[in-house]
Length: 400
Image 1 (cartoon, helix red, strand yellow):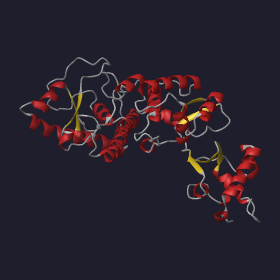
Image 2 (cartoon, one colour):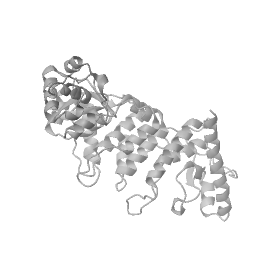
Image 3 (cartoon, helix red, strand yellow):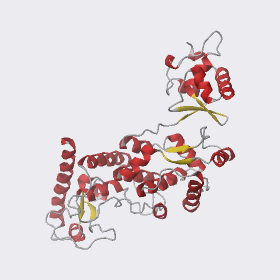
């Protein structure tokens, strides 16, 4: 076995054979399965990296093709070798995302076009649109014509950095990222770097598509994960823009309270485990955004919608001031208690955007804490309350 002896010539011979036989026949002939992650892209076509390298070895003088068990197809082996030879290898991340932490982490590493000097909004707008659909429980997969119409309209209205109304760009890229499923097409979508070829592929095949099922389930069923993703997208791509019109258009303008139960139940629906998981996501984000401020005229501190949701849920719909004399009996339009989430120590004074230093207060207690003559005493009390309530929830999660 001499992988280091391979040149572009043997690899191109293997790709030519794959083109001649067809992908499935080529894989069957050499005993390989479809690539789970890395694909070789060459002249608009896609090839299974490990199978191509195994077959290419057989084109070396005096050598035989390699079997799948002879070497690894990972980044350090087949994929790395092909990249070293100057080929374009794309990482089609697996869609089997099972953890909240992994999903949010991958959102932070999203690759977008930055040729204009600022990150393009194609993929963020597409993800926000799909998140709104998941929140409302709408069908996960849509015909391409419906996806194209909806996204083209959003890109036309809310693409504030010169984005064209071309939904095929973000969908093809998100498919490569493992976030988007495309059905009813026998071949793999081209990379998102083309123009006419990419548009023609979607027009000809009309794939049924939408968020990958694990992604859709996470965004649809976990408010904490959805808000953590929303925080990342807005703070990364819209920090110098006003995202409010876009959020209203996709139905995410009240996402941080959408899953809160209506007033009435004694126990709001947030488990201790979900609270602890949410705090972990908030802490990871806190590390990434420490000291950052939004790039707007007033430069407000970057705040977390996920943290606000955790505090409201923890409060069970009641003011967290132990000396509260009675919160309003009226409710919001969504039938929620009138509560305001407050940082016990202001962010501008070094406070943390974290549930352990945040409380849910009725308007009266909030006013006292902000400008009442007893505010310093109340702040000390609320610091203890916030820490204790946070500790109680996390302790319960560990016991279970």
